[in-house]
Amino acid sequence: MSQMLQVSVPLFIVYLALTGNVEPSNLVIGALIAVGVSLLRPKMDLPLINPKRLPQFLWAGIRYIFIVAGDVIRGGISTARIVLDPKLPINPGIIAIPSGTRSELGTALSAHSISLSPGEMVVAIDDDGVMYTHCLNVDGSERMIANAQSLRKNLLSRMFE
Amino acid sequence: MKSLLDTTIWIVLIAHLLMVLAAAWRAWRGENSLSRLAGLDLASTLTIAVLVIISIIRASILYIDVAIAVAALSYISTIALAKYISDHKVF
Amino acid sequence: MEIILQLVAFLLLVLGTLLSIIGVIGFIRLPDVYTRLHATGKVSVFGLVFLLLAADILTPLATWKALLLIFFVLAASPAVSHAISSAAYRVGIPLVGKRDDLKGKMERGKEKE
Image (cartoon, rainbow over all chains, first blue to last red; front, side):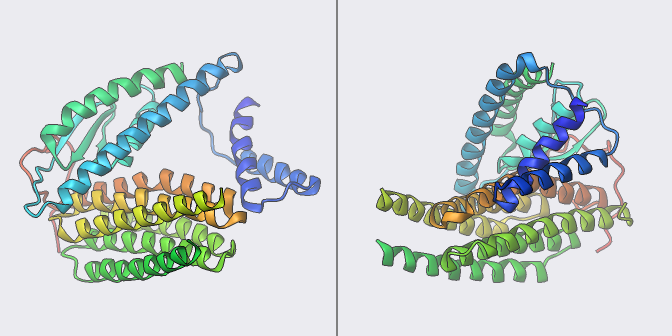
């Protein structure tokens, strides 16, 4: 039941954003479509959010978004500097970064936020959760990604425990 | 301010069209298939940007609907093509 | 108030276009597929998101749809670059650079073309 709620409420919000009117008939149709689509979903075990820890979850989520935004802006500036340099000072390579969490969702979210920032990109993930990351500049990136990953790991474990 | 904004939007539109041409040229002259696929993905992203600029010029919400459809289609088709090239099957 | 909003939209348009141009220049200059994907990610993250924020300010009705498209682009662009780079590694396209921690951990085909 609560899993169905976790799927259907975002679907309902997306429907309202797409149609853009809040008349009662449209609300009813949107709720019916959201519930119907969430009945069609495949079997998956989403981590359940405990309602008592919802404020903590939201607070950790907001901090996570700001940390990712900072990473993206820093990576964008460094990549722009590399691209505009006439000598093209790149030192690309693939480095292995352990994600530190066993849960698949935590690994996927870490890989998403690493790939989102320009300059780093996850090429493959193996079964132990080690992310093989392609970097434009191997020397500078390795320590920075490891620091960011430990920070992310704390927040993710606080969100989904 | 209003006329400056209008001029800027037209300049931005022309710049994006030139960038679509550059990305398509790179996709045409790419050295292997994945490089061409990356070029096509870049071209479709820039096409979405062109649609958003047209919606600003016309002050119309319709073009953003078209942009959402193009974004969804290019996302699915790029991932399916990449999977087809690496595994020789889609699913 | 209106003039401040228009100024912000102007700055967003110029910044997004400049970053898109930098991304396309990087796409043309960088040597192989893996490094080029960093440049395409930059275009879709910065260029498109800044343009959509400007559209959000300038076109009054578009607010929720533009925010939805921003969310979609931010969720989709890492998946696309991961799919292309993983396919390239599996097909066997060689990569520029010395260090490769993934070597030998994944079977690679021989590059055909």
